[in-house]
Amino acid sequence: MLAKRMERLGTETAFVILARAKALEAQGRDIVHLEIGEPDFDTPANIVDAGVRALQGGETHYGPAAGKPEVRKVFAEYIAKDRGIDVGPQNIVITPGGKPIMYFLMTALVDEGDEVIYPNPGFPIYESVINFIGAKAVPLKLAEEKDFSFDIEDLKALISDKTKLLIINSPQNPTGGMLSSADLDAIAELAVKHDFYVMSDEIYSKIIYDGSHDSITTRPGMLERTCILDGHSKTYAMTGWRLGYGVMPAEWADAVAKLQTNCNSCTASFTQIAGAEALTGPQTAAEEMVAEFKVRRDLLVDGLNAIDGVTCKLPRGAFYVFPNFSSFGRKSSELESMLLDEYGVAALSGTAFGKYGEGYLRFSYANSQEQIKKALDRVEQMAKALR
Image (cartoon, rainbow, N blue to C red; front, side):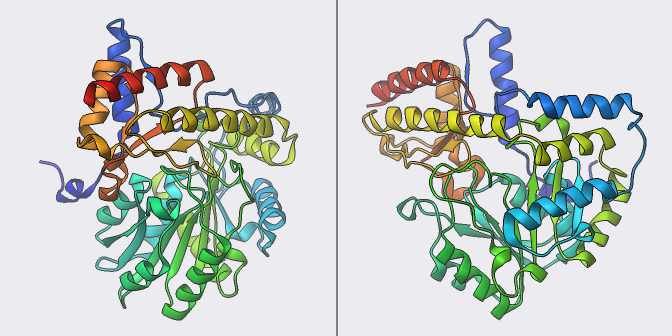
């Protein structure tokens, strides 16, 4: 018999659909993969070379739980310059991917019975971790009519004397929406007024097509009550390297490092060294990747909007679209299964990202233009069959 707490633990549906799609491929089916949030590019050569040199140089041993001191220094210098904030190595904890920051931070800050407000539709692990640690998950609706931002009045209505943490994500998964500077100003005022903390998931901060990234940590009173979650998986096509990090007050960093000691000891040293090269080396490959994503975004959005019954907002960042299929009168989960089983396109139900995702599907455009065109043809076939 499993522990009761396991009943509160969710999952990430992208990996479930990926497994189903792979099983169909094994049967000889042709599947277009638009389900997984993983760049289809190789890690840039300079980063790979740095990792190989580190391995050959003996960087294969345990390191400090919070990260190698010289790498924490590089990460801190990068964040200080990029975000325009005053942080040092003592504010950095390097983890094997970004998810440990979510789990460790909430474990360190949030008690059972506290309330955590999170975006919905949003990355499913937010809600999963909130529930697992025994806190109350309070969904904040992201609205299509607001370009998948949220109404500040809605946020105000959710804040209570039990609110401990607010999670924000900009650019956002699954919608590609972004919070405006005015939104961030208003959130910061509320956080200071009501004395709650913020986890700002900025993992897509370098994958932006319109405008520029803005961090809530630049607002008065926010640096001491915010954790930035960032990492290398998306920007540098390093998903398999497992490299993420948090930027937070030093007291929080000590607690998060202690949790890391208890869970996974440390992050691989050679991966950290490769990550330092990613931040300090040439950015050409990363910039070219974003340029290609923009072409794919436009191709996919234009194609979806040309299908009768489908509407799709133009995302400003990340590499996802979140088209509205509600006119067909079918549940998102039904459309997800139909699209995969009958038409050979792997996508995700909007409800994989929360209850407010009903009526939507998420497509990742981390695939070639040729494959995106093939997917569009198949989605149109499904739409015609449903009309």
